[in-house]
Length: 360
Image (tube, rainbow, N blue to C red; front, top):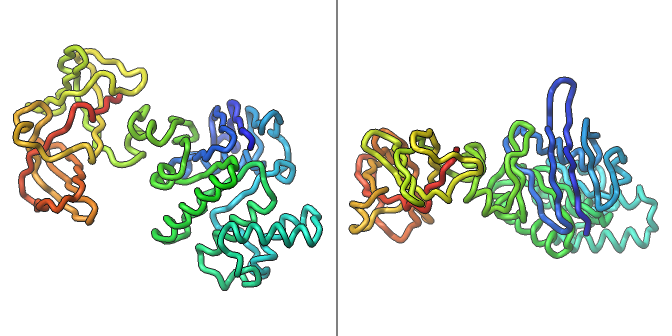
C-alpha cells in the first residue's frame, strides 16, 4: 500500500484555470473520492495523478517518490475509464492480458495472472467471449480486471458506473468496494454521484469550480458542511435565510420570516461563522430531520404548521414539499404505515434545534 500526496497542485489550460491549489494526502489503502458537478476539476486532478496531464504548478508524490513529470507507464497505476476503453476486436482474456504483454511478461505468468484477475471480478468463465457479447456490467468488470492484473500501486477510477442502469450500478458499486477491501489497494475514485461517494468512500474531497471546498469523511461532509455549496450538493437540504435575533447561552434564535423564529445551537455551525445579533445567516435543515410534531411539541419553539404542496410515497418513505409561511420546506418521514397527507392538507411539524445547522 502507498500514499498519494498532492502539494499545491494547479492546472491551467491556456488562460483557463482547471484546478487550483489542490493540497491533500491520500492514505495508504484508503478509498478516496473526488466528488463534484461536471467541470469542477475532479477528472483533471485524476488525470494528473495518472500522468496524462502534468501540473502547471505543485508536486505529486507517491510514497517518497516525486512523480510530477513521470510518464504514465512509469507510475504503476491502474486506470478504469468512464467508457471502459476496451478493445472490441479482442477477447476478454486478450483485453485483460494487454498490459502484461506490453510489460513483456511470460505466457505462463500472463495466463496465471489473467485467470486470477477474472476470478476476482467473477468472470472466470468468460475468458474467450468477445467484448460485444458482454453486458455493460460485464464490460465494466473486464475493465476493472485489466486495471488490477498489472498489480498497480494505485487504482484510479473515472466515473466507472455512469453508463450502467440503477440496479446494476448498485451491484457493481458493492463489487468494487469488496475488491478494494480485499486487495487493500489505495483507490482514487471520481464521481458526480453523491450516493456512490457517500456509500463507498473512507474520505471525500468535494470540488467546485476547480477549487477544493471540503475534505472529510462522509459523515463530516454531510453533517458539518463548511459552506452553502457543500450543504446543497451533498444530499438534500433546506436552506433558509435569516437574521440572528437573539443569543441565549448555547441557543441562537434566528428570524427567517415575519412571525417565524427558529432556534439552533451555537456549536452547530460552519467554520469561521460569526454569531452576533443582527448578522445575516443561512440555516441548513435536512429533510429527514423534520418530523411530525407530537402533541407535547406543538407549542414549542421550532414547531410550525406546513401546508402540503406535493406528497410522494416511495415505499421506504413519504416525502413532502411543504409551504411554511411563504417558505418551501422538504420533509422526509420514514414510512411506518402512517397516513399519507395530500395536497392542501396541513401538517404540524417539528424541527429539533439540534438538527438546524448554521452557515455563515
